Image 1 (cartoon, helix red, strand yellow):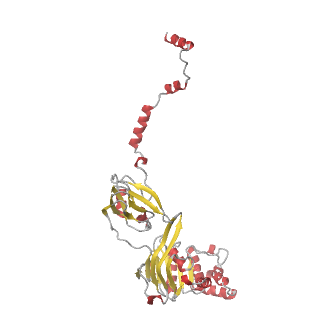
Image 2 (cartoon, one colour):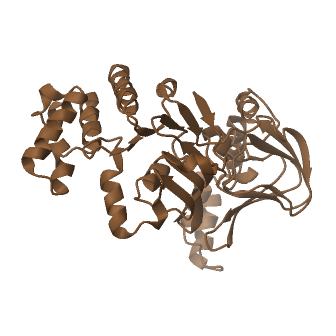
Image 3 (cartoon, helix red, strand yellow):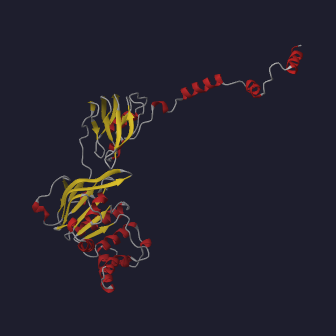
Length: 399
């Protein structure tokens, strides 16, 4: 098994067959800001190989499969499948490509509940105008190949998850496509069912198909001929330790990946979100003993905002494991709980009071409390000054 360099530009001789992806960029605009799902991705998947697209959720695996299937149009870059450049196909040629050149296996199976397994497999053929008898005969052949011949007349609700996935694979093979795209094919299966699907995919590879599997499941890796790491590996301690930035200097940019979280020792840092139209949205200004930037490396996502020095600033960068240990250390006083991620920090004054502080505040409030008698007197209307009746009453009480 080899790990494919995701940034490698394919050589001319590598484009004769299989799949070539070159400098692929896909962007989405969500809530006013731009997300780059794929950023200059390049790799080659030769014919007759299983290539695993390995990465966490949100790393662009399904986006890549959608581009390869002709469902999604990239912002830039090139995709060549068996010598055909996908972006240059006409509408009619694209329809034919989707129908005959690629088969898609969905994570959620996507079987039609009211149809039997046999009818589900025959459905793409019938939709393409194949005669009913021919389509059903082909469905029987494919169900036998995937080990589901005895359950051809069962509906999806009568099948286990692994059995439904086998039927879904048979349906994807209906037009005998040279390329099979499988989106998390073992994600919803237990280890027994997953092992059967892995063995089936390995057998299909031997028939000369190019099989791309998007997954975060390490069980897939041993059967893969090559692996594309959808998230580039970064140096674990790059920039760790004490570091200084001058006012206006970028600490990190939105959309980049990193391994460090930062604690501010001196100065101020602005957290800024870059919008799709090129504008900026100020999220927070952080100061000494506050921290930022830890959420993205914790969950493996790109940075959701940019961090820039508002003043000359001194930071301490921590590899994420060291940062976690720092935050979990009992009684640690290095930070005041500034904030997680690239979102605004709570002001120090808004922090939760300690039990001692709450008790002191309660005691102080009780000292200032007005006595009940005084509150009653305050509610009694005051007598008019110089009232003879009031003065007489007061004189009798004193006597």
